[in-house]
Image (cartoon, rainbow, N blue to C red; front, side, top):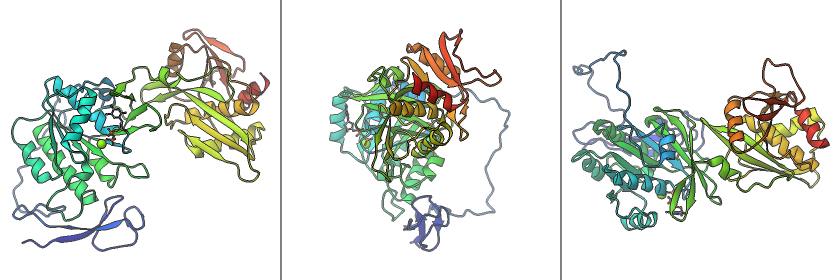
Length: 467
Ligand code: TYD
Ligand code: MG
């Protein structure tokens, strides 16, 4: 019997330490080391970091960089929003990791993908470590996929799963729901620990590459929002997707944060309904559907999510606060960024928000990360304070600098086109570079949208206080 190997693995970053430490030397996290014991498989000599004989002759063959690779074959999943986030379809032999809060709809989404791929004649395998076969069947029934020929198993031991995938007809796609429930016998640590997750993923990915099936791993998300345990997992897979959304809202956003086979930061929009997830082809219209015109404290932001323009409403409320401890509550945007916009409004534009409670909300449960939203946030805030509504049918975008200047942002054409498509007739945007600064409105003929270009935030403030 081989001697077990003891090591202490950081559950945050995956760094392996020979002895216990209070603080990980890899990422600096306190109390994150967990003892993990691994026993080398008899005869195989395969453990993490196992040494191989140096004198062995290598069978490695080198190939030419210049060799022309055939274009990547891709398979449609039957859900066009899902394909779009994966870069236009799923690549055989690739590994995809999907993270997201519990209950957000990961299993539902994947069951729909499996169901429609199976209907299209692909061999699909769904392995669940979280639910029973009965539960999955009930869900398939609700989703209308009860008769789809998806091969289903409830199993968590890789010793059972790997041989089943290794022989027989090659599946087109294999879903593992979730990777944190899987375990390898040769490791003594519990399922969900870094060593187990990493080893299980490694084995599955190796098999996916060898046999050429698409592998989808579901990953849990920690309180901090990272895929649980290992950041190492994100390096091992080809594509990392996050499924986000507010449970109180219908909308769900599937976002690619890494993709070796397509653009990163692409989004797909779904709505969670009685009958499962429905694709939303026109998300701007959906995010603006509950908007009330001519109300103060609201501005429509023309944003970009990946290559897709997206219009969303930003709402602000300014209320008298308790002196000394004003409340600042933000939903869907960065609170640091809000603090900066407030500081610029106060220091550069003479707007007094001190001592006031401020609430900011991105309507519809979307989360915005773009600095281009600064100007729309400022417009909503000033409008909330002055009671003057932002003019009807106006979109706003632009970054704000600390000197109070309005800075240009990328892809303004695409933003304006989306605004025009949805019937907006005006846009408050940064002055374009190289053009003389104009404070009057001008009309951009190619777009037939009235542009009000701004150099300074103070111009917007004046405008919204004097209407
Ligand atoms: P689920 O896919 O189980 O989430 P995850 O795998 O990410 O944990 O999603 C379950 C939620 O979705 C649950 O709150 C119920 C809801 N749901 C619907 O609203 N409609 C449906 O048709 C289905 C199947 C689920
Ligand atoms: Mg699930």
